[in-house]
Image (cartoon, rainbow, N blue to C red; front, side):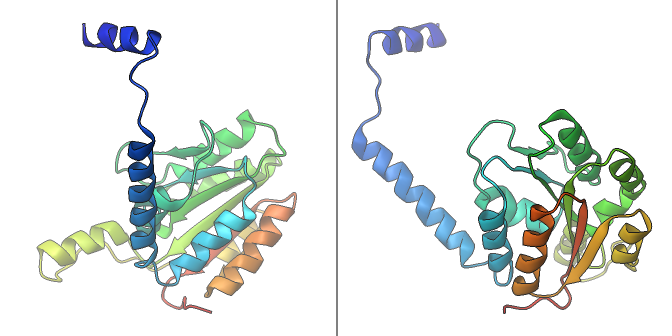
Length: 219
């Protein structure tokens, strides 16, 4: 009954939003985004680099990791359906195979950017072989904080700093990518990230960009 009533109102030309209401919503959105940006620190340069370098029809695939569940999910703008892919649960590791699937399903000219943590990348790292064998053009950004950052934060909050099973000894992600025949680089600043991302997205090769979070600083 409720939906039928709403449809009836719309068909009669009623229920149009008032201009003032739209302005309030627009202002609330802009204010929220500005407040979020002020908390980003060096991530702000990374966000701006993604916005400036990723084509308008580019696809963003998000794993579950601190950067993607805080600022990336809120501040990377989406202008069309199916332009962002992410898990509806809190499981990690799906970004790599999801990015592969997206690449094989769309026009090969479209650029696909996968954002993933170091722990999540390790889950399905062997799928890089598929990327090479299929000749796909993907860009993976690994946010390397040496562990399962989300779980680490939860344990710090709940257990007064006592941690178990959340710290990892990160492997040589650049060397691993090279062993699969992919281009790769490790960056430690927004300036370096911007240069690497531009080169990756302008190329016809797959890239792995490792963001070393223990070293990153504002350029």
